[in-house]
Length: 304
Image 1 (tube, rainbow, N blue to C red):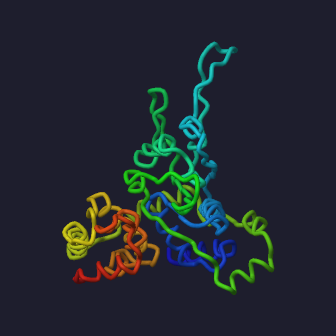
Image 2 (image 1 turned 135 degrees about the horizontal axis):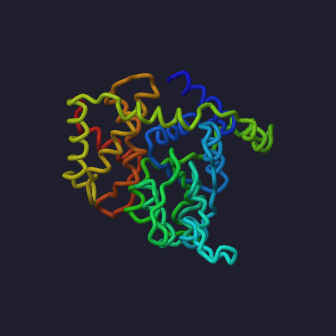
């Protein structure tokens, strides 16, 4: 699997230049069966990353551009009366796909944002009293502009918690940006990206990741980390059991993609900030914690 993983990173790296670490994190999240939140400034490459990820994994892709006047029915679908049949016919919304890109999700109103909750957790949606299953595999990749930008609605904590990981891309380094400016638009490179997997292979990898071994000592380490966030005075609230499960899923995914059948403490450390960074708030001002501060605090927990 390690060879396939590196091949995917190389393929995606031809479109998203100079961002190997972010590409690896995104693949780790999606193979773990989680949903991904990408937060950064406009024009950094958030949407392009979502598109090339779906193309590389061989999955159907649909995009919604979130706006303040968008309604839940614009995502889930609606029933329309047809005269020919004298009955209502359900027209599925864009959520009925394998990879859904919710672009600028924090420009949608809280009512519309909440329409994604059932889909993210249950892999199904209920419209007009009828439950409809979603495609498998099903991923939501949402992009988000920084909170200080005009016209944004902060995601509630309950919805943030549904995202397995939150990452940012950042500006490219000078060499990568020079190459980008020289080659121009990446659209042609994106369209020429060949699928590295099939949907069936993605589901099989997810099943194998779920079976990655975790020792009792490692589980104790995870519990120690959770207990630390709950008891330390640095945090307004500690990590929930669901956050602990998400932490473990991401670590299993990283271990598997590194070619191992067991999780090491370093797997937890590598994914820690991206999994728990959006789930913790500092006690003093309830603001999100910086990466350095979070890692320094959690270093106080001894490794078994």
